[in-house]
Length: 118
Image (tube, rainbow, N blue to C red; front, top):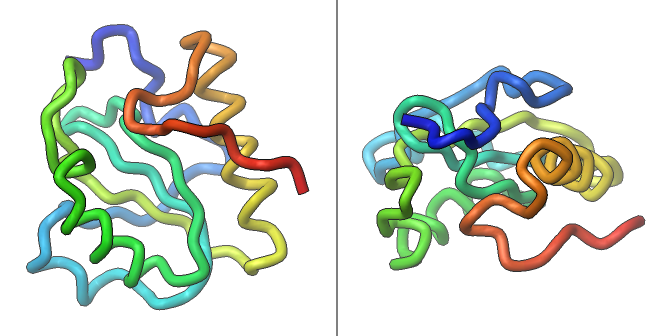
């Protein structure tokens, strides 16, 4: 259940790729730069991030007890990602965080800080 959380399907640009958030699926995540969203099973957004290597960031989150923990919206089940040039990742992450915040009034539950403006 989404508990009123914005869903990943509402983000623009649309997040086109996803894999289950398990080590077994890490090899399906590219090593390119991009932005990503951790969601609960039904798509409730738990975390929005950016990275210069989606594959490396996937692995580091799998080793993070907080990112693998359970929230009131559920646990992280999907790793959605959108490849984009490194020069654009800050703008894209900030855009997704702003879209979430405009609906919910705060950052996703697992985000601690807003993306810096570049």
